[in-house]
Structures are given as structure tokens and as C-alpha cells.
Length: 375
Image 1 (tube, rainbow, N blue to C red):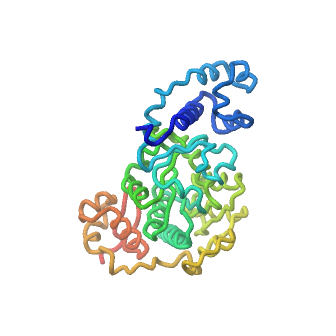
Image 2 (cartoon, one colour):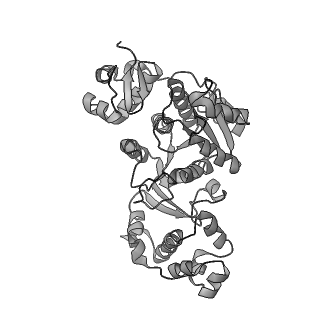
Image 3 (tube, rainbow, N blue to C red):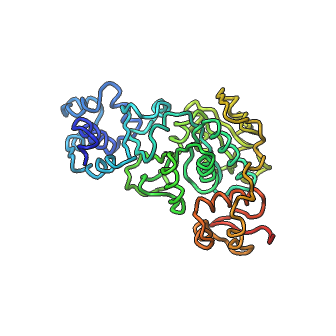
């Protein structure tokens, strides 16, 4: 199967990169430094003395010289599947902007449309438990940026991230989901259908971790540097003082990216955004604030709607009755439960839920949704 997709030279190069990425004590920063004046194939031919002069330890040298194709056959087979690809730092398709950051990933495992990674992207991230205003702002920004030809990049997390991915797809745009686990896993698990929709719609899911790696807490800050590194700028939509979204903002600053923040009420879920604005982040009141700052001009739609405007979809076309019959005033129901109970596809349910929440008829709470009123 490999021979149908890769030639022998490509297989050898990929194997070397896979082996190099797993070397003990060598991360993206040290790895890039080791390869600063040589190529991966040249490094494979270095003697122990040459490797020592580069600063490699005895353990690292022993590991590097014990390379075996069989050790990476599963990853190589994975990359031979349709819509799946491994990009290394020397790959022509490796995202240009990401390559410029300190500690750029040595490898990217890509599921879906890899060409999106070199298109203009804006990162949209925020709270896992957003308010109704936050949901509305995220949906509006994602929809309007998508309509202007911007790829929406986020982390597939619950809340703002998921809304941004889903809205981009619904708007006919594209999205990049960066995971803190291997791309053969989805975290949180309830986003499996969303992940499938992302790939099916022509968008892409990526990770720097081997496909089989499960999510771990320390992976997510590493993921955040990729989200900002891929993007022209990072927009924070609702973030508390200690929110993980602020890590993305910090990485964006370090990477010389623009940082934008949507203001909110005093304290609470908007405290982090308000603090960012106080520290110099650009305040976002409407989509035009982002486009104008980055000097991105597209003619597909007008961008002068307020962030707090409602979606343009006609609510009479949404499956309210079938869905609302299954949303309770006093019992939290998950998206999967609502889809099963109503008999509707998850994508239709998510579309309806966003619109219903913007109308104030339902409310997003930890674990799912509840009704805010009976009619």
C-alpha cells in the first residue's frame, strides 16, 4: 500500500522524521537547532563523534542509530490512507506561517484538506462555558469571517471553539481544528460527529502527536501555540482570568501575531478578555474591526454588522418543534440525546440549538442544554 502513495525516498525521509521526533530529550526547539545546518538525511549518516559534537547524549545517539522501518510502519500506513498526510518541517506543504514560530512542530499529522493550512486563517477561541452573548459573538464572527474567505482555526473544545468550527461549515467556509491528542481520537468525545463533519466538508483536523496518542493535560498548551502560529491573528471570545484561551493569546504575542478580544461584562467569563484589552489587545465590536486591522479585503459580503447581531437564518426554517419537544426546563439534555430523541441529524440539531440559544429560548449549561421558558 505504501508504494502506491510514497516512493522509497519519501518512505525513508518520513521514517527518519518519525524517528527523530520520538528521540528522548529532543523537542521541537532542540530538534530545529540540531537540524539548523544539516538535513535529516545527512544526520542519518553522521558518526557517533559527529553527533556528539552536535550536542547529542549517548542515549540519544544510541536511539538515533537504532532506527527501524518496522517501528513506524503503523504511522506510515496511516499516511497512505486517503485524506491523511504527515507533514514534516521540510515538506513543501508545511504551513508557512507556522514554520516561522519558535518551536514549530517537527511533524504535523493531517486529516482532511491539507491545502487549507497555507490559506489565510484567523484563530477564534474562548470559554468552554460561554454565555449567550459569547455564543452569539462567536457565531457572528465565524460566519462573517468565513464569508470573507478566511479559514477559521480553533481547538475543537467545548463551547466557543465548537461553535466557531460548526458555524464556519454552515456558512460554506472552511475550518482548521487543532487537537491536543492524535487525530484518530476526538476530545471531547461528544465532538466525534463534528470532527467527521469537518473532514467531510473539505476542512481539516491536525495534530503534532502520533495518531494513536490520547489526550493529556500537558498537550493542550502545546496545541494552543499551533492555533496561534497558523493564524494571522487570534481573537478571544470570552475568557476568565485563568482561561486556557489566554495561553493562546500569550503565544500569539510571542509569535508577533495580532491579538483581538471581544469585551464583556465586568468580571466573570469576560474578565480575561477585558484584561487583554487593558493590556493592548484590539477591541472587537464587529467583524470589520478584525479585517481592517489585518488589512484583509474581500468583497463577498458586507462586514459592518455588530458582533451582537443575530444570525441571518430564517428561524421558521429550523426544526424547532421536533427539537424543543425534547428540551426540558429542569433536565439537562446533551446534543446526542436530543438528536436521538428528535430523530434529527446531529448537524441539524447543532444548527437549531445555536439559533435557539441566540433567541434566548434555550441555554447552554455544563453537560448540554435546558429550556429557559415553556413557549
